[in-house]
Amino acid sequence: MKITIAGAGAMGSRFGLMLHNAGHEVVLVDGWKDHVEAIQKEGLKANFNGEEVIVKLPALLQSEVTESATSDLIILFTKAMQLEKMLNDLKPVIHEKTKVLCLLNGIGHEEVIEQFVPKENIFIGNTMWTAGMEGPGRVKLFGSGTVALKNLVDTDDAKKGALEIVEVLNSAGLNANYSENILYAIYKKACVNGTMNGLCTILLSNMYEFGSTTDAHMIVENIVKEFAEVAKNENIEINVSEIVEYIESNCYNCKTIGLHYPSMYQDLNKNNRLTEIDYINGAVVRKGEKYGVPTPYCAFLTALVHCKEQILGAK
Image 1 (cartoon, rainbow, N blue to C red):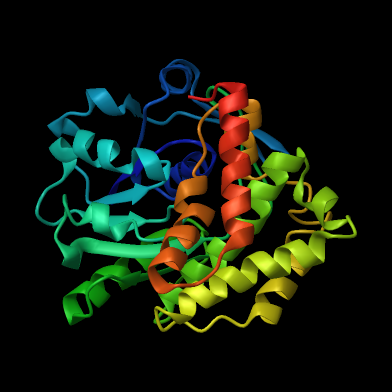
Image 2: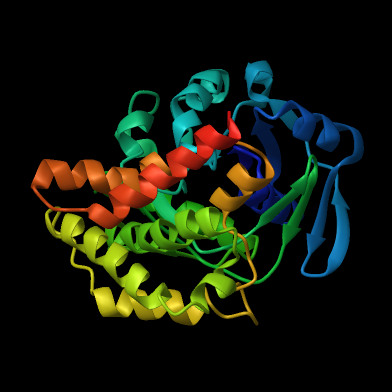
């Protein structure tokens, strides 16, 4: 299958590398010039579960995408605030049968995607894989993960397309599954991001270090409660205790992913980039205002991250 990875940062590079190794025609597309040029010149370099690998992958700046890169499947990994521009730049590769799988952090991205692709070609999901950016053209990939996805429109053809994507991802060992309850899965992932991303970014810690503090449980529980109250207004039931236990047993485990610094930490503290906080905790604040649900923890964390963005002059 011809696959375009839209947003070839740490996670996009992981999926691109694994899909390429499985024999698919993969093109990495990104807006970071140094990163793209490094891959073009020397290949994608990765610490892949302790093994140093170099993979030759086609890589393009999104501003230089042409019709020659026509795609059967676009997997979206761009930052949420860059989504509309990325899709606009990808217009040359989108044809009437191009499928788009959105694996972005946050909530509500399908509203943007619908401007470029018919609803029946849109698939939403999330991933629990992790990855880290170590510099232009170089990533760190460790541990294991999963992908859950579903078609946006409930038709037989759309479901068939979703199952085809699952098969493609599994051919690369990406542990994908079709989920009828994908909105729950998306909110579950959003709870993880809504706690670990912003908190580790502000506290300059990895997930294990944060989880080792005496107030970690209280803070995480209150943030998850706000996500759950908002989700309830969208007919999505979230068991707060189960989600908190999931975060604590997985994210704080130093033998698995606990030593990982979340993507928001990497964006702001390492690369001086603006964060996706408005599409995670900020999205909960906006939905809370809409539904009349108080969200003080999410509002405070969103404000803190914005303060830090301004102090660091992030772009």
